[in-house]
Length: 419
Image (cartoon, rainbow, N blue to C red; front, top):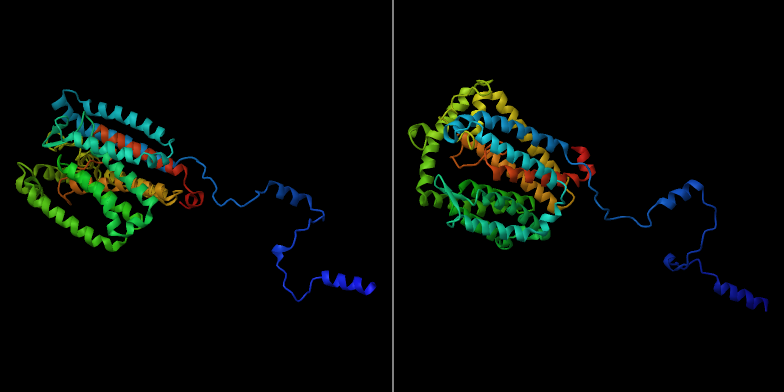
């Protein structure tokens, strides 16, 4: 009887030579006492690791906000100094341009703060509606409803739809790349929808015509595609297409040929097309190191064409000199730097590409204006952000800064601390 009991216990005892799967062993409760500090720590610990923690909003980027406000204030000062002569001569009021721009600046600043509170994800949700509305408005511009001025039909009831098209390209491209990152790694998948949207916009802007908007929109598209992972080897066909398009524009439009000729030597035809470039370079050169003093410039007195618009920085250089110009350029450079820092710290790919596109738009448009007034590229009509007179452009620029500020509120804390 005893031997039988021992054999039964031995059968139940596990063989130490056999490997036991610990996952099949029943978990036995541990009745050992737990220290009080360990018990309190385990009580407040999460039941499972949080692999997708929610990104909470924090304070916006004060560097971006402060730089935008400072550029806006300097821009209003420069606008009044550059425009009061033209305003008095053409509008019978020296404060005509600054009054209109001041109202737009106040509205735009309030809109920037309001938009900074709206989540950036809303634009991804309504990207199709933005695209449809922008295309419809661009079509209406070239109808009798549009307003023509100085040989171009770009306005619709005082609104410039090309500004809406620029931000629409940024939103749509950012959304499409974030939804399908592999679409930018093949020429076939880039034709639709990226190439199709660019072709529609370029075709409609060609009818206005609006050369600077076409160049900016194409540049924005390329920047976002590259940031989204497009192969650099694709620059070869893109460059060929760009060269062919530029050549076609040169031979198709007489005014493009005239602009190229004037660009090469603006002083050869100062009575007509070369007047803008020549007066701009004279104004910049007259400023010297410290300038002639705020309000003391001479070229703005009916010499420099459009001193309140495209050539406002030429007037600023004449009055504030190299030092004043360097101050403004440093502010633009810092704002662009902060914009790319926000894109780097963005919480997801859509916000990263959205911030990249908005910052690239600011950089491209600023560089184009500086290149035009210094004669590096032909006159294209690109305005200087926050400086040039124009309600639509200023409102859109401040609205885009609001989007950038909203993205900065969700920036990753680790990357933000590094910057």
